[in-house]
Length: 188
Image 1 (cartoon, rainbow, N blue to C red):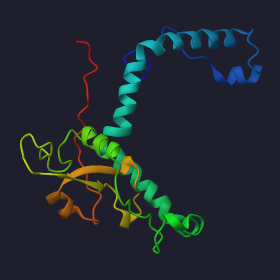
Image 2: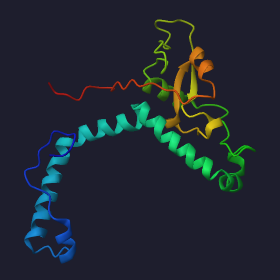
Image 3: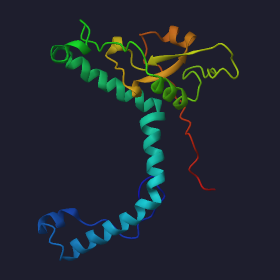
Image 4: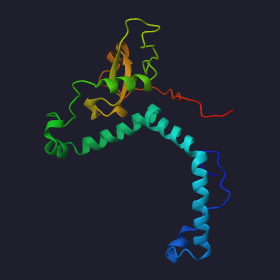
């Protein structure tokens, strides 16, 4: 079974150690099994591709817990190497060794974050689309604040209402635990 896909392979995986010993001769039974296994995986690829794409997109864009943890680890690396980075990329870092805050956000990024976060404040879930709450605007927030070695990468950004953004400021890595997929991949 290919984990997480519901696809059951009809052939068991080969013994890769034996194949490494024979130098992948392509003649022994283990190499023949490897070739059959590769063919089976190629067939499975078509059946599992949409699941893999949806799962990858979810992990890389929608899973806020993952994004927060990823950016926290990245911040630790930036902090560790801040002296080197500050010397090497002087214009990208401030005097404290933190990445410079973006001066403006391009429209495509603002629009992308708005759609990714479904037009609601990530923390309190207030509608920011203007449909239910006229006059509310959204603010772009760093999940891991710049003051904590966060960065300006879209994976470290989220939309918040002004109230939540003022409450969070640069002291918290708060984000949502909601993980709502864009679409349902079940064919039921």
